[in-house]
Image (tube, rainbow, N blue to C red; front, side, top):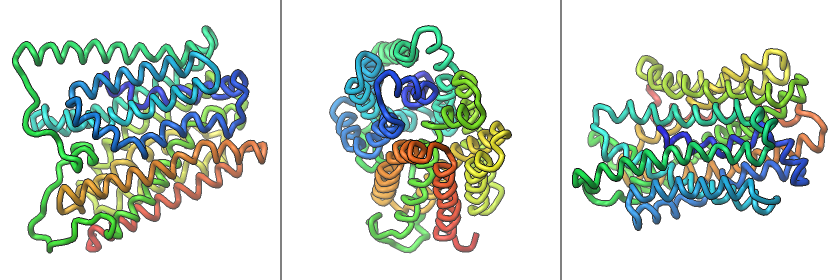
Length: 396
């Protein structure tokens, strides 16, 4: 739980104070959007690096490397001018990528099977708790100590996680525990430790994810999902301040609703999926996603409602996509390939979202066009997620 607090929060912490960072570092809105983009781009490009680090160092040390990297990047980002800020985000992005890959592997290895789903759910929820805290508190903290110390202050979460993880490692040494079983395969690392059920009743199929049409549908759907998430996360506080005339402290507090509501989506999609056809969760989540930019465009005075609905959607969208991978993949190799392509391609496209939306805002001096683009991306997710469910099980 403590480690999870540090695997999204350092990125989201910039959003409530992005205008102050622009003014202090002399950045345009489009260039400021690149700060978030760099971290997301690392999610797409640094997965092979993460897998190599885990193989060479082992899972426990890889967690330490991830935490120390997040701490170093957080300090570097606040220590100097624009080059230091961008370099710090690269360090943070690579370090979080290592954490993203290794923590689910640790959970699958060390947690009893009957508790693995609960622990994974709590881990996912804590990702959003971390982003909620930074969204809520960074702006008022910046009023007191400035944006540099305010964004660096969240390194305290890293220190807490390092203390707890160090205690865990000492306990493992004391009881003589060692890594159980062989090192995880590349497929296991790429899928984040997802257990793949090999349905032998299915006809044999090629392991090549590249030739699987579902891979490309899910890649496009995930790109649309991630485009919406990182675009909204980066610009929602600024958007609310412009559209509703509220201060950045209030805007940051309001945008925290978008983050915490994701817990409902992450836990609600599996419950709904157990009681309804596969296309129903995809359609519900996609419709809620579309409601956010449509609502902000047509009725911005009800922004709290749209944030809440969009937050549910962003938490549930990830679950919808990767549940389909688990259900459809016939082998670990196919699952690993699908997951790598979906995440790599999706994050690569989504990395463009913050700077593109920032550039559109700068060019039009308003938020109408960026919101129209978000309507396009969320609508794309809605359509492609439903199409993907029909590919995996046309009878449902």
